Amino acid sequence: MGLRDLGLLVALGAIWGGSFLFIKVSVSEVTPLTLVTVRLSLGMLGLLAYLSLHPGALPTTDLGKLVRAVWRPAVVIGVVAAIAPYLLIAWGEQHLTSGAAAILNATSPLFSALLAAQLPARLGGERLSLTGSAGILVGFGGVALLVGSSGGLTGAGASQEELWGAAAVLLASLCYAIGGLYTHHVFAGVPPLVPAVAQNTAGALILVGPALVLARPEGLPSPAAIGAMLALGLVGTALAYLLYFDLLVRIGGTRTLLVTYLLPGTALVYGAVLLSETVPPNALAGLALILLGIALTTGTGAQALGWLRRRRGQTGHPAARE
Image (cartoon, helix red, strand yellow):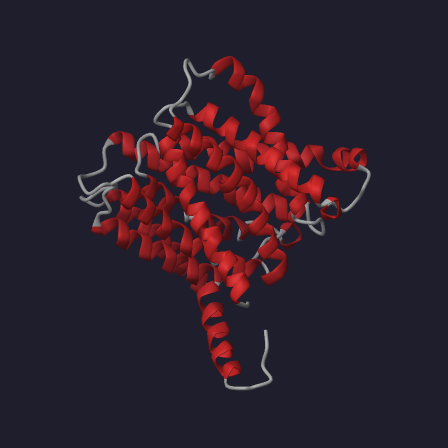
C-alpha cells in the first residue's frame, strides 16, 4: 500500500466519519424518510454520472441485459444494505450524538463475523477462531460500556430515548453485515461498482413514492440542512462508494477494512468541534474496546502490523518498491 492508497483510505475515513455529522444536521429539520430518499437519489445520480463518463466500468455494454440480470438482488441490497440501515441511523441520530452513532455503527464487522460463522462455506461461511470469538466478546463489551455505564452516551446517563436510538444504530450495523454477506455471495466475480449502483438506484426508486406521499417537507429547509443533505448524497455516498471500490480493487478487502478504525474517530472529532457534542470518557473506552474487538475478530490488526514490519524492512533495501 503506497502513499496514494493510504491517502485515499484516510480520505474515505474522513468522508464516512463526516456522514454522521451531515445526518445529525439534516434530521434536525427533515424526517429520516426525506433524508434517506434524498441521499439515495443523489448517490444514484452521482454514480450514474460517473458511469456516463467511464462506460468501461460496467462489465457489458448491453444495459438492458445487465438490468435484467441484477434487478432482483439489487432490490434486496437496496432494502437491506441501504434503505433499512440509512433509516435506522437517521432515526437513531434524532436521539444520539453523531459521535455515539458512529461508534455503535463500527460494530458491523463484529456482526458480519458472527453471522458468517453460522453460514455454510458455500454461502461464504467462515469458522470463528478462538481469537475471533474473544474479539466479538471484547467488541460487544465496548458497546455495553458505552451504553450501559453510568456515564451513558453523553456523560449524563443514557435516557430511554438514547437507548432506543442506540438499538436502532446497532440494528443498522446488523443490516450492513447481512447486506455485505449477501452482496459478496450474489455479486461474486462482478465489478464491485455494479452492486453499488444497483443498491443506490433500487433504494432511490423504492423510496421516492412513499417519500412524496408521507414525508413532503412543509417548508424549505435551512441552507445548512440543504448543504448537509447535498454533502451526504454526493460526497458521503457517491464519492465514498467510488473511493471504497477503487481501494477494494487496488489494495484488497482486508486493508480496505482498516477504514473501520478511522471512521468513528473522525466522527467524534467532527461532532465535538462542529456540533459541540460531549465526548465522555466511557465513549472513548467503549470505542477502544470495539476497535480492539474488530482487530481480533478480523485479523486486520495483526496483518497491519505485519505489513508495517515488511515495509520497514523494505525501506532499507534500495531496490524495494511498492
